[in-house]
Amino acid sequence: MKLFYKSAACSLAPHIVMAELNMVYELEAVDLKTKTCASGDFRKINPNGSVPALRMESGEILTEGTVIMQYLSDLKPEANMMPKTGTADRYRCLEWLNFIATDLHKNYSPLFFAGMIVKNVEGQAELKSYYVEMLRNKVAVAAERLGNRDFVLGTTFSIADAYLFTVLSWSKYVGVDLSAHTNITAYMTRIGERPSVVRAMKEEGIL
Ligand SMILES: N[C@@H](CCC(=O)N[C@@H](CS)C(=O)NCC(=O)O)C(=O)O
Image 1 (spheres, rainbow, N blue to C red):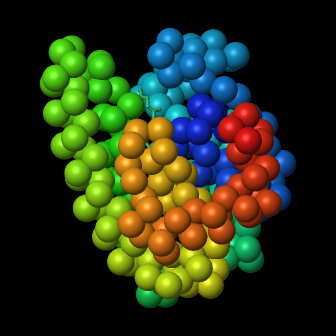
Image 2 (cartoon, rainbow, N blue to C red; image 1 turned 90 degrees about the vertical axis):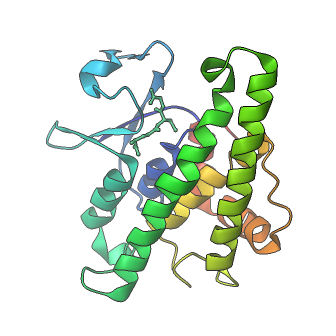
């Protein structure tokens, strides 16, 4: 299997999942600006031009991070990285994945590209302040839902943790202050020390 990724981007989440599951995998870095990678034109691999993309054992390409992570966890169901179909926890996990993808992830993105969205500096500052405020509220919701659990679903590390950790780790680059939520800062430290997370981050050159 090969994961097409960009260092520290959302593709870190499935990368962590592959490491956690002790899978045999290859990595190929993508330049998101030029949409190129060692294999050539990345749009031929993923017409959407975004990472992550996974080349599965069959040779087919699977895209969409939350789906890739579900696919990976289904390859090794015994590792319980996603609760079994039909259980209440399964839907709790899906609820987290959707919340992270749509309410967290996509509200961080404009903070990285403010200069491409708005040309004048004042406009960029306004845009950033809007999204930082939006994220302050969304992170408060995440903190409330996490409560005093070790992991989002309780005591078991799941694919939702790999994704939540990845997205919240962008806070330091874009001025989103997590320090008001001590459960979140402790969570970030706890997940960041996990061997699979350390391995994936090292492989991406972040550590
Ligand atoms: N819908 C995709 C979006 C992934 C996404 O936003 N990836 C970002 C990096 S974190 C990206 O590749 N952005 C460049 C682009 O979309 O052109 C998913 O959930 O996997």
